[in-house]
Length: 138
Image: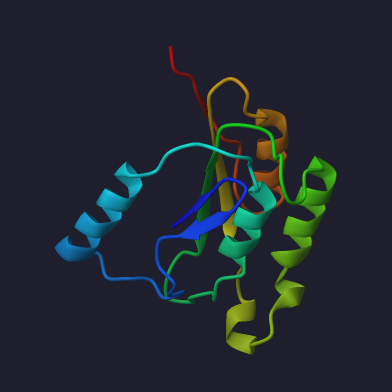
């Protein structure tokens, strides 16, 4: 898990998946409840950090990205974000033979009416995801 605004804030420094035991679930739930929105949106930085994680051939390698708006810091051009993500997430980038069997499936979720759904959908489709949905608050 990774919180992002202009900066990136990982929940854990480890790339390893943690067991879904009560202690880790409680800790993760508390971290999620403490999240808040401020600053810019370094969308590509968050995606890059997520898909550069080590692949695990025994699990589904899925990255979920939740955003509320346009990218405003780091790489902000949608065509570049989409190109860089697709290139970085390409199976050609693999360095170890075992981890070249798959790449990260990227799913994007939009919150609010300022989120760019068309661009997020394209980003997901280019990276083994699918069209996403948008959540509106009244």
